[in-house]
Length: 376
Image (cartoon, rainbow, N blue to C red; front, side, top):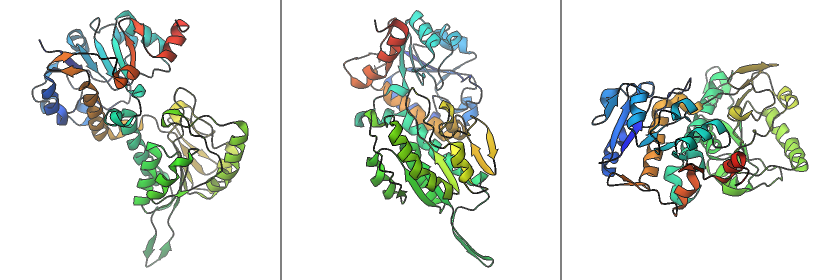
């Protein structure tokens, strides 16, 4: 009998994405699985139940969880949801592995094999599975649109009968996936774009998109494509150079994040107060505390004429395409563990091994194991 792959309706407030979209249904046929969908799961993403041709629609999450051998989600399940899972089932989702110990304990109790999309290794072979990147690209795109909406200035240069309007100056801090997409989007809108990242290797990428790289003299390449934390001396040097660029920007997009740690504070209150009235800061790191000292997660703050906005769950605001991208990421992961309707977990596979959070009642990811079990 083919395994059943179930997709519940997301329950976290404000979450509009869904883990399965009609566009990938034909691909799932190749895996030989039976698909289950909770009634209305795709509605907020723009997909009616009728669009899921060939998928069994069930009336409740209880009915879905009791039948599903594999559960696909966007947001981490709360412990009460995990309690409804079949014992020994498999879960693939964002799981916030650096936190949520109660959730991890619930997964252990039910002997759930859980795979965290945050832990997918950033290697070339896993690029099609990298959901952090697919969703971050949406965040970078949307951040620029938010800045343009909140700004009192037009982004492109316009030559009109009433005179010429100079283009806006946009500074992007952090040239990862979100930052690079922000650079590209701001350029498409006609802005003059500067960008900074502590990883000097990003200079070429920034310039290839038409941005000017801000060189502070600080280099902080880290493991896995992320930046390491800066020393106090490096932070002071970075701040001195960046503050001057921030002061002249019409819009600043910040994207700097360190997995499992609070977002680094890059823009202090004094730097905000040096900015011109009507300038805008969009802080994409708001969910982990923000890159700006003035940021209040989920709020729009007017600080002495400068608008500072820290949006939360930005990809959910573009739910249709965010869901399509995420659903493809999930499918690509499942191709590594499902064949001819059967589930096979090969922990010799680097992608499977590194992305696994729990399996057979054990915590597989070392940092979480150390938190919960003292490294045993």
